[in-house]
Length: 452
Image (cartoon, rainbow, N blue to C red):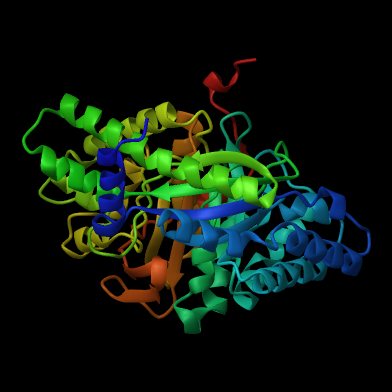
């Protein structure tokens, strides 16, 4: 039963603690758009996306007014384009990227994801063609996001794909060097990529999904931090219970919005992703949650343990609140999008190596990490390989969104504005992994992958 106390508490979360629905994302299948003619393919993609998501923005705005809940982004994700592009030319894949941008412009949405490939075990001709034009596609478009799944616990790690992605990251940075290398902020390299993720830049519509579906991402780092602060000097066990209860309430808000949006749009309710996704706004930081737990600074010894407690409690509370929890669900630690993370890096408490350790227990990986623009491609490949191996070995999703900022050195800043925020340039270990990367081939799946 809904009572006055619950209503007032939710209002307080929204007004004072930055609770919001970070995104309503409509997933759309493009399998019925397949055509051998690339122009016909693009026409069908545009028609399908604009028809299915035509009411998405308006519906989101109506729900905002109805419930008084901020809905920050309205987005679309589509079937990984390499799966429906087939044998079209690299130029054909560029045309598809432009079509996705055209569709996003027509809808008035914030981002569109799915310029993607799944190459964890091998690469089709279509996947190679798509990967070859990712830098140009992201440089030419503003709202198109790209992701490539290069590994899975079941298949192992495709090091040939990682080598290609290192080159793609480097070229994407170069092509947008006059815009803080922003193309790299729209490119994610995954292990164990989820098929129902509503968050960009990694969202795509999985092959096992319905024709269309609504997935919602809820975010409330400020709510959790405030709850911990009010709790005072309690034990870690009590802290975990508090976070679980708070995550439950946050997830309920997400489910309410998701079900209403799906009903109004005549589609299926997919999942609620209850990730604690921070913003540069004051009071909306995952790092500050960790510091409220008792750390002098995010990055101090004990940070990984505190993050493990937080992530586990968030997942447990969310699962109790909805039978359809999915996506990434947990705590995000993107440097540029989290005021507390930025401060920790700038004070020297948080390093790239410590962030990598933290990703073993969080929901994503090395996210929105800015590094010097002169870093060698092989080092970028090594950063990706290290992070991806954590996901494969631990049967979890991990990802890398790294930005080699041209013309910048360690200690400088890049500034994207908005939700993407700004990032201090982090120093990188310059010892070369080049000979290791050039061995190419496949790192086999771990023994615990053999569960059939």
